[in-house]
Image (cartoon, rainbow, N blue to C red; front, side, top):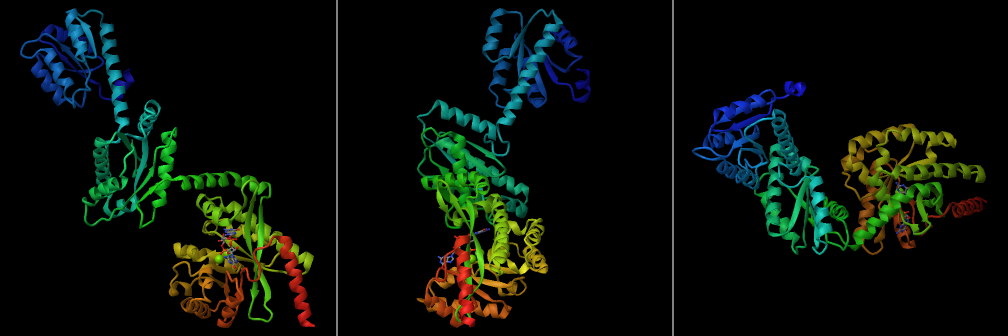
Length: 567
Ligand code: C2E
Ligand code: MG
Ligand code: MG
């Protein structure tokens, strides 16, 4: 007790009584533990309560007084938003008055004449404790900036609505600010706060018309749980207009995700879905609003499943590496020159899952390095096995994700493989997609240069799908350009497309690197590419990606053809 008194300012108690003796007695009882101020009538008391409202812990109030009695004071305090949380203990000698006072909202009563000092001290102490606890709860209940519920309270109330009013069809709506950190960085935090407050206000206006509750958390995410409402686009526009009105300089874009009510779904699940829908809008300049639907639901389930199953897939060898040949087409007949390692997932329940549906997923959640490490190791092992078995070193390219490139252990890992399988660096080529370069050019160039310095060859994958400028290209460390499949697809039908292919070949010539054309499916495409000077070709025309055993046969066959051609 003594300790806490020294640490913080004592709580303030107002004693209101017209009898000086009563004020003195109470003052004496409480003065060791509290700071005391006094009033001798209701009018004076009310004035002091207003002045000290932020500090006042409790009021001890006599009921029968001249000028303004205690009942009137109680009435005024209870009906004032700013004062009503201050607890009042009434001082009375009359049984009836006591009851009336409690009915009017007094927190407790003390009977006159005062005896038992310990009882009085204990009552005052308990009432203060109770009211401080309640104020703490009130503070935590609301976000002070937007006056919307804080996270925990929001979900507590949402769960109650869900539980006690199952007949209400409540939707989950998430509103988010695009790149809020830049809004803060460019316009200052104070402006950022004004944006948040404005959104909060607009949402509260909306809720005044529609049954529901709302919350703000994680800085710029607003969750709204409201009775099904047809036009969320209108709500989004309304909020966006309100934000636009704050400044004509700052451009702030909102996005919205909606998960419509579904029988039995708990709020937290519904909000997960709304959040997922909202993040799908991110960076999308056409749509600002996304509604979570069955297709998204199925995709999420599928993604979840793949993420869960990856560990098992590695352990149980569900992942296998296929190989697709690349042919040098500038010799006659075309000659097998290398291969690309491509992952395949043979899932026990889902069958063959295409890398297109799990690679981007694992790139996002970081699991990609598990996949890639597996593929690199397997590819390096395979090159060594073929060398030993067939007497040829057939270089294999592996794909690197941008996540891999920024992994500080990358160099050591690749170097470890080269050593373990006794390979030349040129036997394990690295494909890096063009867009990875354009996202973070400088750092990328630095990392890739280090790999090249060790002797690894770098192929720029999907060239033409990113946004490299010619200037950038000229100092990008690359050994081969792999032209994106889109270029090849229509060269036979569209002269414009063919001219684009010629352009890519010119760029490669300027950079002094060979070009691989991907996705070549027909003889006509092959002939055109060959005629235009393309060096290497990969595609179904020659072969689909093959399992290792089938690819081994292909190597043997190619070797035989080579031998025959020599003799
Ligand atoms: P990519 O590296 O550009 O690989 C070429 C893709 O084109 C492969 O698809 C291949 O099967 C396909 N393809 C080859 N020839 C033809 C053709 O003539 N016509 C058509 N329509 N397609 C052809 P796949 O195997 O489905 O792989 C898709 C993408 O997934 C790859 O594109 C690559 O970016 C990624 N990927 C595959 N394996 C791995 C891996 O082990 N690690 C990483 N990080 N990414 C991988
Ligand atoms: Mg590739
Ligand atoms: Mg490619």
